[in-house]
Length: 166
Image (tube, rainbow, N blue to C red; front, side, top):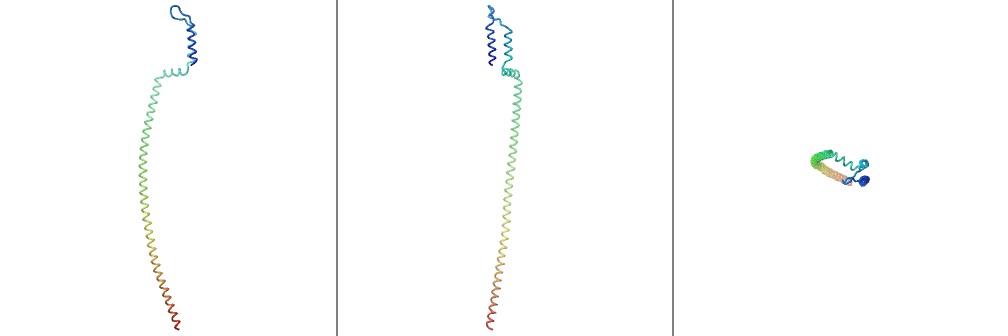
């Protein structure tokens, strides 16, 4: 940018040092020197100015490209929104299926618990019945053994009594 200001100073100096044409308000300038300064300016224009000129020249193309990119972004956003809606529907269905599976599992667990409880109750009832039968049998056999021993004792007593009589 400083170089550009220097070139403008050079042009101003050429204009200031040029000869005036009498009675006209015009001056006579050294054409070659002005052309040299203008060529230097063109060669040393800052890149921003050249880029700005290119942008101005490519204005319509840039706008069309921007509109095309914007349309692509919109289409991409719409596709993403459709995908999100689809994913939401899949999630909802999966949640419903998971809920149904959980309810089925709970129902089956209740049925298994009930069946297991009934089975255990039946087995305990059988065991109780067998134990009562065993207890009754034991009681009966114990009474029989007791009576047997009592009768043996009676026989022994009688045998002793007979022996004493002799």
